[in-house]
Image 1 (cartoon, rainbow, N blue to C red):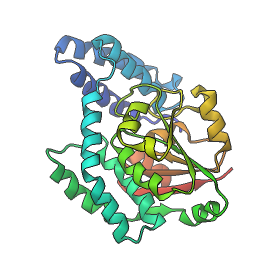
Image 2: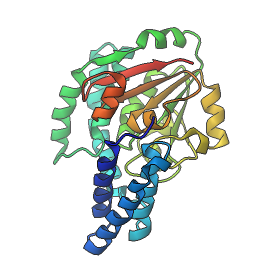
Image 3: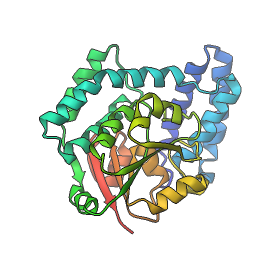
Image 4: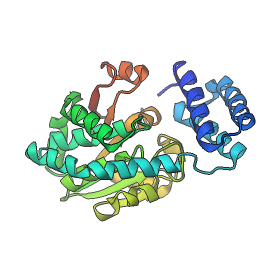
Length: 283
């Protein structure tokens, strides 16, 4: 997806957020913003927002010497998601273990993404409301048809806390050989191999790295292993906004599974802000 002007102030805010997580030294935070502004001024040189975000977060790491500013946030989010895992299981059971609601649980995991909350109870209250919301776009009929012959599934992961929600979806597809692809290294709060394994996904999927560390998979930069899985998978789920921005022209059929958390993404799908999407893209 092309870069939008709306992405620029959002990227600068994220740079400041990451800088404050990595250091409490004002002079380093100032340097981070200065370098980020230089990067933003050359936004036309980047393929997409995740491409630019990588350089901004690389600057944060180099200036502060902290390789993973979001490490504690990711651990918190994974643990919080684990704490509500029984609620997710019970909810799906109450919904008759339907495919629709298994997909919806996976999409709802987006609420863990850098969420502001003070206790697990806050998450539970938010979760109860979000789980009941239905998809605005839902191409489940196409998925059901593909599942009649599919033998394997590739899930391209999003944020770390969301991995626990994806575990519910993976457990629903026990009859499929599932590959779960994550970032090759720490970037924002996106999931890495370590995060996915901490969520228990190693028990129900094969966890691999995409070979790409941008907050959204840029196919040209991925590993041969990932591309072999990507090209041969019977079904592909691309999760979250970052992956949609980076893989907007996948060259193969896939499903986007996400919550439209910014006006740009909502506009691209023709939905209202904060609505849920399960959209099939063919060739």
